[in-house]
Amino acid sequence: MFFITVDEEIRLQLVSETLAPRYLELLEESREYLSRWLPWTEFCNTEEGFRAFAKKSLHDYADGKSLTCAIEFQENVVGNISLNTIRHDLKMVEVGYWLGEPYQGSGIITRACRYLCHHAFNNLGMEKVQISAAEENLSSRAVCERLGMTLEGVISHREKVGDKVLSHAIYGLQRPEVVKQGLFRIS
Image (cartoon, rainbow, N blue to C red; front, side, top):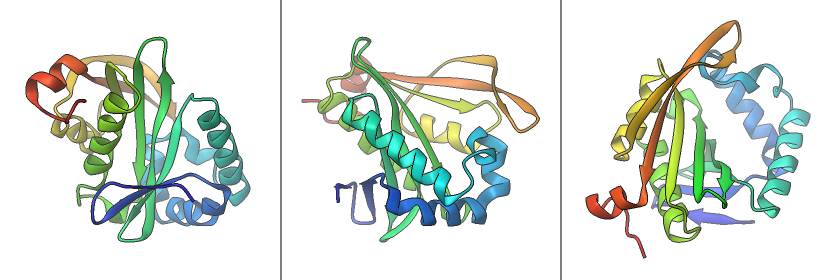
C-alpha cells in the first residue's frame, strides 16, 4: 500500500478499490453537505461506483495525469484529495478535495493541501498550483487563503450541482510567490 505521511495525524493513501465501502460511508454521513458543492454525489453513490472511480484514478496515476489519495486522519479515512489534473506541458496542477462533514474544522484539508503543494513544486517541478472552489463555499476558499494563494478571478456558471449552477473562485499559487513568501521549501 502506498502511503505518504503528512504529519503525526495525517497520511495520504493512494486510492484503491478497497476504499469503496469507506467512501460510501463517508458519503452517506455527509450527503447533504457534500451535495451542495460536488456534482459526483448524484452518480457515484454505490460501492461499485467508488470502485470504478478508484480504478480510473489508478490508471490516470499510472499515466502521470493525476494523483488521487484517501485522507487518513488519526488512522481513519475521512476524505479525498488529489492532483486532479497534472499538466506537464503547462507545469501546472489543479488540486481537488472533499472531507466528511464531521471532520471539518481541524485543519486537515489545509495540511494535506500544503503537502501536495510542496510535492507539486519540489517533486513534480510545477510552476503553478491551482484550486477552483465554489464562490459560496467559504470554507474551501479559506483553505486557499491560508495556503497563501491569490484569487485570480471568479468564473460564472462554472458547474451544475444538483439544480444549482455555481460560479467558481479560482485561486493560484506560482513558484515565484512561493519562493518570495517562503511558503514551502523549494529545492
